[in-house]
Every structure is written in C-alpha cells, then in structure tokens.
Image (cartoon, rainbow, N blue to C red; front, side, top):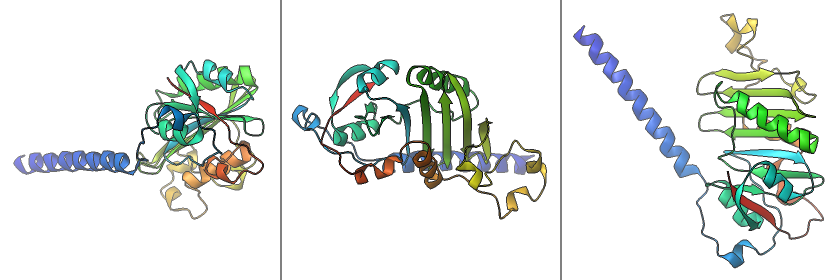
Amino acid sequence: MLVFGILLLLVVAIRVIMLIYRLRKAKSSSPRQKVFSAAEQTTPDLPQGFGYKCTWIAVKANDPQKVAECLKLRNISACNWAAGISKAYDDSVFISPPLGGWIIAAGVNLPAPESTNDIHEVKKMLAALSLVFGEAQLFSTHRVVEYHCWIKAAAGAVTRIYAFSGEAGENIAIEGRPTRIENQYQLVNTFSEESDQDNYFDRDDLTWPDEELVMKIAADWSIDPTKLDELKDMQPTLGLVGQL
C-alpha cells in the first residue's frame, strides 16, 4: 500500500508539472503585447496576417460596426490592423474592415467549443450571427494542446462542426456533413464505430487535424487569415476594437 501511495503521488506530481509547463509555454509563445498610442492605433494601415493560437469568426458583411454590435462588444473604438491584431491576442476583439465581402472578428477570448459544455453556447452564437449576416463561421486553433475547430452556420442553423483535442486524444464535437474540402481527408472521428477497433489509431489513411488544416478550410470557406498581408489592391484603413 505504501508503494502504491508513493507511485500515485508521483503520477499526480508529474501531471501537475506538465500542466504548469504547458501553461508557461503557451504564455511565453504568445505574441508580445505592445502599448499603442492613440495616434498609432488610429493610423490606417494594410491588412496583417494572423491566425495561429487564436480564435476568429468570419461573417458575410460590409459593416464592422454592425458586427461589433451583434457580438455585444463594449468600449468600441477605431483601430488599425497592427494594434487590432496585437489586442486580439490579449483581452480584446478586433473587427476587421471589409475583406471582399467578409469581415473577420478575431480574439483569443472569443468562445470556442473546447469541451462538450461549451458547444451549446457557441452554436447559439453562430446561429444568431448567421441569421443577421446569412452565413457565419468560427475557427479556433492552438498547437500547444493541439486543439483545432471549425464551425459553419447559415440562415440561423449550424450546418457543420468539427472540433478535436489532441491533448485528450478525442473529438469534442462532430456534427453535420463534411464540406467539399473536408471530403479530401479521412478526418479522425473518435465517435465512429471504427474507432473502437484496436488498430484504428494506427491507420495510415487517417488525417489528424492541425493548424495548417484549419487554415486550408478557412481559405476554402472564406478567408485564410495567415495570408491577409498578401491581398492585392487593398487600401490602408481602420477596423474596430472592443471587449466582450
């Protein structure tokens, strides 16, 4: 019994150490926050790429103010890309200027289904946004814990969800039919009957989601945010920033 107790304490200690390491690594690898003056924040600039270790929503819209209001942001103010993306990785939500018929709302604090308890609220939010704008999408990815998610809603209904936690080694949610681009991959599905087979996770044809796949799906559905600085014929402009 004494040996068992010591082993149990060692297992708990190792898990605590691993958790602290992940949290410190995630914090240290986040973009360093810069303090922007009012003039620096309100100087129009060109789109800047982002997306890794972040959550963002894409809606079919041309009015950033309307998007901010639908997300119920507070303390809304004008903001350029440089300041907006920096703040999105802190405690704010950046609403982009129109991008070819789409507007992106980015922020690490935006709700995403990181557990089964979060799914209902996220679906409710996306469905409501799609009622206003016709279509709404949410993407979220963080490679430290290998969390990856994409959701699509149209006309008030969520039509597709895929969310996976590499840390847990299982899907959080899968709903709706795979879209065209998803059909190019044999995505891991831990809810399937096949996953009960002993050799399921050793299959060579399985696709494990990663941040690059999230960007590919975002590009197919709307916009790949990592390539925003490659957009042509864009003029310096401002978006909005606010807090949830």
